[in-house]
Image (cartoon, rainbow, N blue to C red):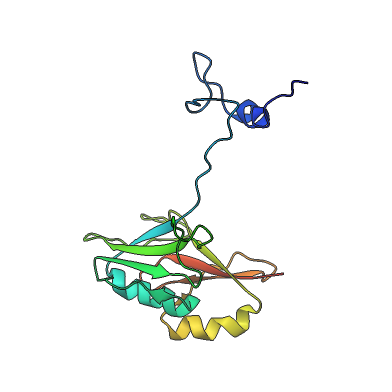
Length: 165
Protein backbone atom coordinates (compact mmCIF):
# COMPACT_ATOMS: atom_id res chain seq x y z
CA UNK A 1 0.00 0.00 0.00
CA UNK A 2 1.30 3.45 -0.95
CA UNK A 3 1.98 6.00 1.78
CA UNK A 4 3.13 9.60 1.46
CA UNK A 5 6.74 10.52 2.05
CA UNK A 6 7.54 11.19 5.72
CA UNK A 7 9.00 14.49 4.49
CA UNK A 8 5.75 15.66 2.88
CA UNK A 9 4.91 17.78 5.94
CA UNK A 10 8.31 19.47 5.76
CA UNK A 11 7.89 20.27 2.06
CA UNK A 12 4.43 21.65 2.74
CA UNK A 13 5.84 23.92 5.47
CA UNK A 14 8.49 25.38 3.13
CA UNK A 15 7.59 28.53 1.22
CA UNK A 16 6.67 27.87 -2.41
CA UNK A 17 8.90 29.80 -4.81
CA UNK A 18 7.74 31.19 -8.15
CA UNK A 19 7.72 28.32 -10.63
CA UNK A 20 6.51 25.85 -8.00
CA UNK A 21 9.75 24.89 -6.25
CA UNK A 22 10.20 24.77 -2.50
CA UNK A 23 12.83 26.82 -0.56
CA UNK A 24 15.73 24.86 -2.04
CA UNK A 25 16.35 22.21 -4.66
CA UNK A 26 15.49 18.69 -3.57
CA UNK A 27 17.07 15.97 -5.72
CA UNK A 28 14.57 13.35 -4.60
CA UNK A 29 11.68 14.59 -2.45
CA UNK A 30 10.97 11.04 -1.24
CA UNK A 31 14.52 10.59 0.07
CA UNK A 32 15.38 11.61 3.62
CA UNK A 33 17.19 14.98 3.52
CA UNK A 34 20.70 15.42 4.84
CA UNK A 35 20.31 17.42 8.05
CA UNK A 36 23.30 19.56 9.08
CA UNK A 37 24.83 19.25 12.53
CA UNK A 38 25.95 22.41 14.29
CA UNK A 39 29.73 22.12 14.45
CA UNK A 40 31.19 25.42 15.61
CA UNK A 41 30.01 28.94 16.37
CA UNK A 42 32.65 31.57 15.60
CA UNK A 43 32.85 34.87 17.47
CA UNK A 44 34.70 37.90 16.11
CA UNK A 45 37.00 39.58 18.62
CA UNK A 46 40.19 41.65 18.93
CA UNK A 47 42.32 38.73 20.28
CA UNK A 48 41.18 35.18 19.53
CA UNK A 49 43.43 33.39 22.01
CA UNK A 50 42.50 35.70 24.87
CA UNK A 51 38.77 35.22 24.35
CA UNK A 52 39.16 31.46 23.77
CA UNK A 53 41.01 31.22 27.08
CA UNK A 54 38.17 33.04 28.85
CA UNK A 55 35.52 30.65 27.48
CA UNK A 56 37.72 27.56 28.00
CA UNK A 57 38.05 28.41 31.68
CA UNK A 58 34.37 29.35 32.00
CA UNK A 59 33.20 26.08 30.44
CA UNK A 60 35.97 23.77 31.65
CA UNK A 61 37.00 23.04 28.05
CA UNK A 62 40.46 23.11 26.46
CA UNK A 63 41.93 25.51 23.92
CA UNK A 64 42.83 23.55 20.78
CA UNK A 65 46.56 23.09 20.19
CA UNK A 66 47.83 25.51 17.55
CA UNK A 67 45.40 28.28 18.47
CA UNK A 68 46.82 31.80 18.35
CA UNK A 69 45.72 35.42 18.56
CA UNK A 70 44.25 35.29 15.02
CA UNK A 71 42.23 32.04 15.28
CA UNK A 72 41.48 29.88 18.29
CA UNK A 73 39.18 26.90 18.80
CA UNK A 74 37.86 25.16 21.90
CA UNK A 75 37.78 21.42 22.40
CA UNK A 76 34.66 20.23 24.26
CA UNK A 77 34.94 17.28 26.67
CA UNK A 78 33.52 14.75 24.16
CA UNK A 79 35.48 16.25 21.26
CA UNK A 80 34.23 18.24 18.31
CA UNK A 81 31.84 16.87 15.74
CA UNK A 82 33.85 15.06 13.04
CA UNK A 83 33.83 11.95 10.90
CA UNK A 84 35.80 10.21 13.65
CA UNK A 85 33.62 11.68 16.43
CA UNK A 86 30.00 11.76 15.16
CA UNK A 87 28.88 11.97 18.80
CA UNK A 88 31.09 15.01 19.39
CA UNK A 89 29.78 18.34 20.59
CA UNK A 90 29.31 21.69 18.93
CA UNK A 91 32.13 24.01 19.87
CA UNK A 92 33.21 27.64 19.89
CA UNK A 93 35.95 29.31 17.87
CA UNK A 94 37.24 32.87 17.80
CA UNK A 95 38.69 34.97 14.99
CA UNK A 96 40.59 38.22 15.27
CA UNK A 97 39.06 41.15 13.41
CA UNK A 98 41.30 44.21 12.97
CA UNK A 99 38.49 46.76 13.24
CA UNK A 100 36.42 44.86 15.82
CA UNK A 101 33.77 47.00 17.51
CA UNK A 102 32.38 45.88 20.87
CA UNK A 103 28.70 44.98 20.60
CA UNK A 104 26.21 47.35 22.17
CA UNK A 105 23.09 45.92 23.74
CA UNK A 106 20.17 46.26 24.04
CA UNK A 107 20.53 49.10 21.49
CA UNK A 108 23.21 51.21 19.91
CA UNK A 109 25.45 51.56 16.90
CA UNK A 110 26.84 47.98 17.03
CA UNK A 111 24.01 45.77 18.33
CA UNK A 112 24.64 42.16 19.20
CA UNK A 113 24.19 39.72 16.36
CA UNK A 114 23.54 36.82 18.73
CA UNK A 115 24.39 35.79 22.26
CA UNK A 116 25.30 32.58 24.05
CA UNK A 117 23.20 31.04 26.82
CA UNK A 118 24.85 28.71 29.34
CA UNK A 119 22.77 26.53 31.67
CA UNK A 120 23.75 26.39 35.33
CA UNK A 121 21.98 24.93 38.33
CA UNK A 122 22.62 28.05 40.42
CA UNK A 123 23.30 31.45 38.84
CA UNK A 124 24.51 33.03 42.10
CA UNK A 125 27.00 30.18 42.64
CA UNK A 126 28.28 30.31 39.03
CA UNK A 127 28.60 34.10 38.85
CA UNK A 128 31.79 34.63 40.94
CA UNK A 129 33.79 32.35 38.63
CA UNK A 130 32.57 34.16 35.51
CA UNK A 131 33.45 37.52 37.07
CA UNK A 132 36.88 36.33 38.20
CA UNK A 133 37.62 35.23 34.62
CA UNK A 134 36.85 38.71 33.28
CA UNK A 135 33.10 38.82 32.65
CA UNK A 136 31.11 41.83 33.82
CA UNK A 137 27.46 42.01 34.79
CA UNK A 138 25.51 43.92 32.16
CA UNK A 139 23.57 46.92 33.43
CA UNK A 140 20.44 45.79 31.53
CA UNK A 141 18.80 42.75 33.17
CA UNK A 142 15.52 41.95 31.41
CA UNK A 143 14.63 38.80 33.36
CA UNK A 144 11.78 39.63 35.67
CA UNK A 145 11.82 36.15 37.21
CA UNK A 146 15.59 35.90 37.75
CA UNK A 147 15.74 32.87 35.46
CA UNK A 148 18.78 34.29 33.66
CA UNK A 149 21.40 37.00 34.11
CA UNK A 150 23.17 38.90 31.33
CA UNK A 151 26.97 39.36 31.31
CA UNK A 152 29.57 40.69 28.89
CA UNK A 153 32.66 38.64 28.01
CA UNK A 154 36.05 40.42 27.84
CA UNK A 155 35.40 41.42 24.19
CA UNK A 156 31.95 42.81 25.05
CA UNK A 157 29.76 39.98 23.68
CA UNK A 158 26.61 39.48 25.76
CA UNK A 159 26.07 36.01 27.22
CA UNK A 160 23.65 34.66 29.79
CA UNK A 161 23.85 32.29 32.70
CA UNK A 162 20.45 30.59 32.74
CA UNK A 163 19.01 28.61 35.61
CA UNK A 164 18.41 25.05 34.42
CA UNK A 165 15.41 23.12 35.60
